Length: 190
Image (cartoon, rainbow, N blue to C red):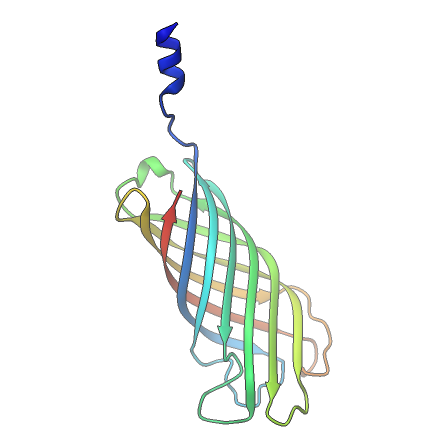
């Protein structure tokens, strides 16, 4: 009886782990049919984001991903746009190397999924304020490595594009929106 109680009280290896990752990075290679007065979407812009991922010991996982890029329609050397941003909110499936292969090294992954892409901008003269929501997808990859049992780093390179192309008075033809991000973040593992 005592042995059964001791066996039941022993901690078990977790089959899955949560990763909470705040990230910073760059948004670049943007292209859009939305009116871009400062020709800024193709420039580099800093971004902030985060990921919440659930990874098992095998090869599959899921994640929620968000990336916010302030100044997406602004170059900084012109004053035609008051404020602007892009926002991507995605739900992804992850495929990664099994944890037992990468316990003490970088764990590579690829991920992709669907969600919402949103852009907004307000011009100085407010002739054509823009707020556009489109269904989008993303695909990317990177690597996750740990310094300790609970703390690590994540490197991520990702492509975003829209699926649907609605008409908008703020665009030349149907709305097209695409860009890439490169990010790095601190992973907190639970």
